[in-house]
Length: 168
Image (tube, rainbow, N blue to C red; front, top):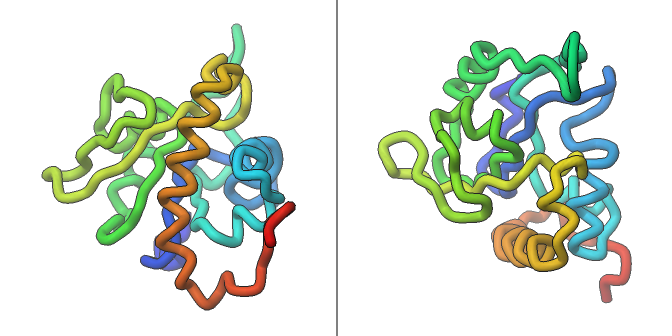
């Protein structure tokens, strides 16, 4: 992960790793799911957040069962290099939360990172395979959280003039 590209203006959305080479963080289904909650296109949404992954390359499939292998050591190393000061942060998934030292965080509740000087929110991974995303109440809660976090990006000149689906 390129730490230099992390700015301090947009909310920071942190994921695990891309499942396809050559794609940006949250390209594909996860980005579309989050954007869809806001009634926006993925392009509009990803223009208003800074999306990064802890791991640079797709992870190998598990030899048995579902899912992919997760390099927790590399993820913790990458998490420790991120400068999160002054950021609105969303950790996407339990494995990302674990990389930041959080065990069993409550979904969507504010959690302290570091020495408590930073607050982050943890969501289930937006790949859509977690049953959390099936509940309308859960989707509304994430929508509310994202709207709140995106308010700080409204003053960012880089995003002016970019409109979402159905915006006025």
